[in-house]
Each structure stands twice: as structure tokens, then as C-alpha cells.
Length: 164
Ligand code: PNS
Image (tube, rainbow, N blue to C red):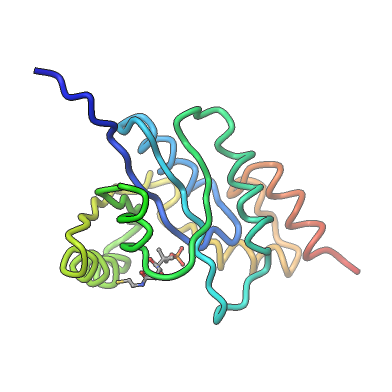
């Protein structure tokens, strides 16, 4: 018997800015679920290079080819967002074992808090070293990040970090 239930998943993160690694995970999640909500976390206590609106716009451009992906923002607990939007599962990319400790801790906490499960998706090995923080650092010092982010993000990085 087929179920009419919409299968929804959440991909939360800071996305400051979105990288090719994030987009790889999002595209693979989009192939597995009916609806994917990518949620940009509004973190007042963390200094970011791009505003929440800019991060959302870059994600929207980067996921324009996936009609079942939508970009939102959230503040507060990720499990409260899941509950409010009827999303039963969080999907996170895992780059390396070093990601695992913290991700497992959060996954177990979120499960304990609200029964929201987390599934881990291994990143493409091509992106196992890739992090937004490194991209920003390299771009700031004029390094080439063109293979790490999509062209529209590269452009924004140049505008933001280039000579003023
Ligand atoms: O891209 P990041 O910075 O690794 O994303 C981390 C994020 C936003 C997914 C994580 O910090 C989060 O879920 N924050 C929301 C607040 C929350 O629910 N904290 C408790 C987690 S157990």
C-alpha cells in the first residue's frame, strides 16, 4: 500500500557561504526526499561574513535546479523548527571522522529533546576538506577558491573580500 505522506527532510547550517560540498549534499538529499528545507541558522552570537539574507540568496541561486528544495531561515532550536514544520528528519553531511563526535552529540541530543532523527550522509571525497571557514580565509588572502564554490558565490566573495 503506498503512503500519501510527504517525505520531508531538513538540512540546517550556517552556510556562510554555501560551498560546492553543501550543494552536493543538498542535491543528493533532494533525490531521496519529496521536499527538502534548507534552513539558514540565524546565530546572533557568531560573526558572519554574509548576512542571513545574502546567505539565503546564494543558496536559492545554487539550488534553483531542484524544484523540491526551498530555503528558509530559523532562530532557536532546530528541533523546534522541525516540529513547527512537520519535518521528522535532519540530514547532515559528514566530511571526516573529526565531524562525527560533535554531530553525534547533537544528533543524540535532538533525538532526546524531540524525537527528531538525524541521518548522516558522507560527503563526496572531493569535498572532504572543504569548509566555509577555510573558503573565507583563503578568499580573504586572495587565494583561488573557484573550484570550491559556485561562480555566483565566488563573485560575492570577491566583492566582499577584495581590495577596498
Ligand atoms: O553549518 P554549521 O555552523 O555547522 O551548522 C550548525 C547548526 C546550525 C546546524 C547547529 O548549530 C544547530 O542546529 N543550531 C540550532 C540551535 C540548536 O538547536 N542547538 C542545539 C543542538 S543539539
